[in-house]
Length: 298
Image 1 (tube, rainbow, N blue to C red):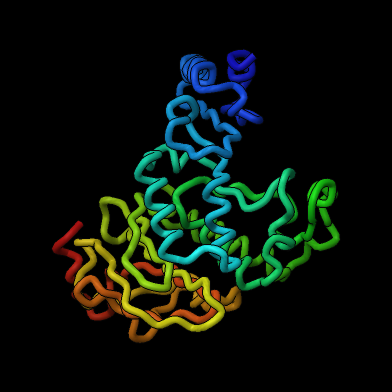
Image 2 (tube, rainbow, N blue to C red):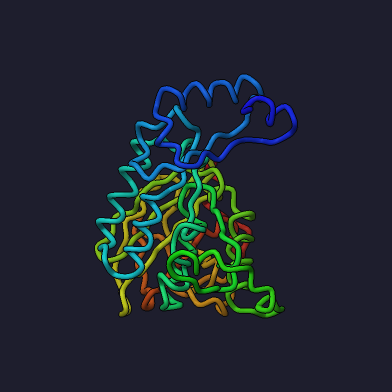
């Protein structure tokens, strides 16, 4: 059946309760899928720690990453701890497998995001992480409209088409995040590297090109946080101004502006992030005036 559906045109398989199949048979299934259709994708529903399930599957549904994001955003997990957990999972699972895995915040088996995180600020923060951490964002119908829903069967309620309207703030925010990911190569295929911070969660998505670099800084606290973050990227040139791609957090913030005073000095980034705020930044490699020191690096 795996081979026949691939021959008929499907691109891959999402396997329900894949842990019940086990390592050996999952690997046989995945190998058969690749033999039948090179480039096909096998994603497993695996709540276990993902490391040893590769290469039995190409990717997993990120149960662990989902809980890390939600617990960070609702205050149950400290930012430095979340950073260490994510870094370990990327290092041990491998970037390629992480990129093929689904980052989801809710689905038909869980309460909806708007119910799990009733504070809109925390919810928006979680959605930014879903679209900027390594993986493939997986959106559950209606969550782009902040549809609520508790335990089964509430989370499986029909789509609220009556909520779909031009200017809906949650829908506009989701569209902005999708556009952000599509526009920036590093968010789709870039490597992950944690930045060194104290109270903030901060990381880079980077490629072989300095201009692709994206730095994400998250404040999961209900109060403003100011601190200095180490961005350990040797290609970020000293005194680089940073372009704030979303406007500092708020969905109504102006995208694509250079926030005054936010520059990389000797690999250090000094930032002030509002409560439940997030900054998504890239270096300005072509400042006004015609001269750029980025000509010295790729």
